[in-house]
Image (cartoon, rainbow, N blue to C red; front, side, top):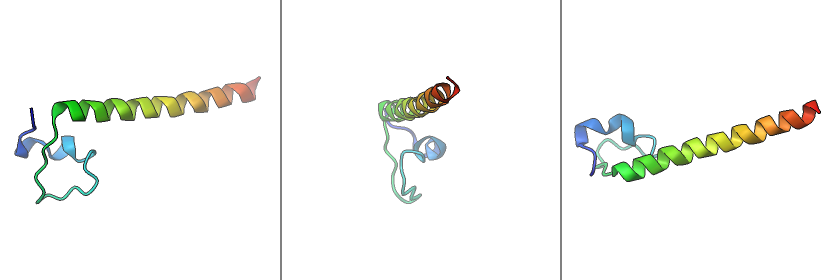
Length: 59
């Protein structure tokens, strides 16, 4: 189900790098959820690598 035009400025802007207001944004909820989970997974992976590096330094 695509977002409505007046409600998608905040939700779709992280997914659209150009962020052209004249361009019609048609992103489905599934694409948005996949992008959010991908970003969360990537951030958690970076935090895991950083904390494991700090843990190895403390040994």
